[in-house]
Image (cartoon, rainbow, N blue to C red):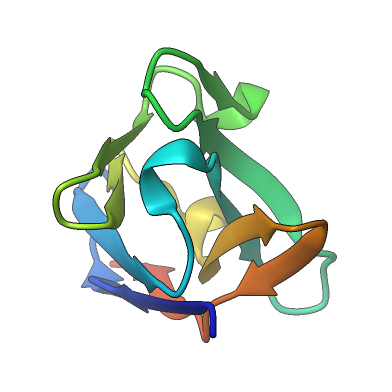
Length: 116
């Protein structure tokens, strides 16, 4: 079965950096696009970034462009989200997403809190 396991969240000061990881299993990772989403308390889940299977295509939400970088290591079945210049408004639960055979799969999420 498809499994997505996020890690790397934590508490960071404004302006700091974090790198999130998502370990995937149960599907053909290298041929599948992967995405990150986030959900802040009281808000809807929102798109953060997406990367194609070959890493050629990367898309970002406007508010993350220039600060966040999505990448992947197909040998490790892992997708990453490097987050720099973090702001308090980046505080949210971050989720890894895969669409496989028409179904959405989500990890359990990893909490990112940006606060001084």
